[in-house]
Length: 113
Image (cartoon, rainbow, N blue to C red; front, side, top):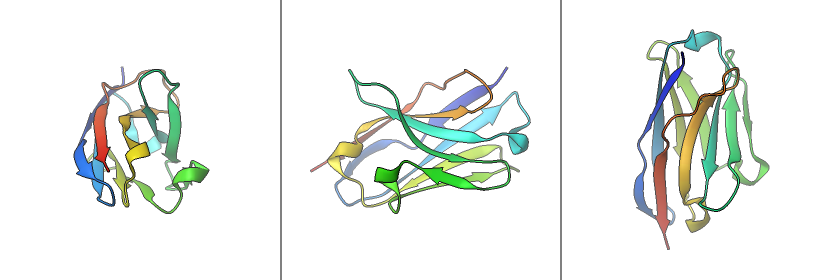
């Protein structure tokens, strides 16, 4: 069973940066497409970015140029580098394996103006 543990969230001022991590176990990580999502209370979970097993990346149009998804297959870890953060990026961020329905507990990112 896939297990996902997000970390790296916190409070940052607008214009700052954070790097989120997602530790993955229970699956062959290197063979999977991985994704990041985010959710604001009262709103639907929103797609952020994805990366295939071969390293091909995709992003939500509104986030291109500020967010970078990457992976370390040896460490079975997914990353999300977030730069030039804005208050509207405030959300709980989740990682997910495309193939499975499981979600992690998420990590809170709060951007102050």
